Image (tube, rainbow, N blue to C red; front, side, top):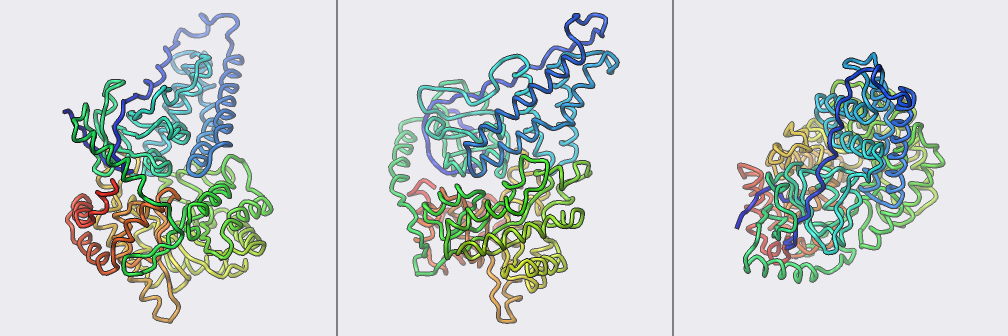
Length: 573
């Protein structure tokens, strides 16, 4: 039996036929003859209009798909739609239509192809978050070329039977609209544990493995077995693995729905909250039993537009979320713009290193007023509802920044200000920083990336970009310890986790053992995390956390903890 190894990003043991993503759109032939050989009806103006029309059509199609999506999928589709209408991409392509362009005139197809390559290379050179947008640019380029050719856009293959989707990687716009009724698992040869593919697979509840070299060459129709927790793929599996897949299907169905009150084996309470982006997400999370919202992403109000939304528009959007959780905690993250979420009215696309640039809270330095208006809208929405609203700022690095944010919240009438701990400096100085605010929430995706200096989209760096890294866990412990020191004045400073780490049932145990007070995750993860925590006492969790901290590597930490949690294997997690 041939086997492949990668990084397991969503658990599950699944057996099924492989369907490969269609090969990428073929590169258009170069047209370098010059204007003298251009057909009479092919002018720079006509070709330029074709490019503009195709870009608009692609944007409209992506917007239409976004309108029927929710959560992470909606966010990704809206961001990709913005990329399709990027004036830099379109203008660069139109310049290549001219006979005076270096090398002579191109066809519209060739011009957009070369322009997309140039934009992608520029983003890749910037590194960090901007490098994450390379896949978006190349996806948009392929869609525009297909539109120009009158062909269907690249997409998920169709099948009469459920299948395991294999690819080098998946474009965010495709991953966002996967049909879990047909696609039963995902395997990719590149990507990382915090890539769009990984995050959306977890949100959809699909077993998934990334960074598994060679899986994109497995023949269509080949039967394979994947273990999403172990990160292994087996071609033409034997009877033992077939039985394992059947057993997992049975075991997974025994995980009861979350009852809305999470307790550990000794009665210790750890509230389980949900990450949401819209009112529709919030309703689904409430229906799934979430004890509140640990992360309300407010970017949805701001995406896919050229100007700042009005206070009234924001009040309506936030109010729809608050209404779903009367009497319960809703933690709002203020606008996390910049880097991978550029906004034309707020951020500068020419930054040399956007991952380390003006993003999140820092946009208040360059565009004062936007944050204050957002806080005003949050306060007004709170006044119209019964939710207990907490507000936190992303990308806080110093105690001075935390203090300033607290002042802004107070001026808006918001009583519970907090900070995201995503930057190592915030974790290292948590004792000082948290004296300025009421709580902290760990964004483990960014904290891992910044701690390990590893782009979360890069498959070769997947082992580094792993929240099980002992260095990351130590920063979590430092943050909790800093919160305890800040509590010396008598006011409790709770520390939650709203990053993807909270959705890993084994890592959730470790986080609780490190002293985290709440866990927030996608609604789909609530039942599994609760089922595992219910088998563990707080003393056992603390013991496992200590073992993870002392492990020499992320893989060793994971293996050590999982070996002492037999419930994971019983449930196929």
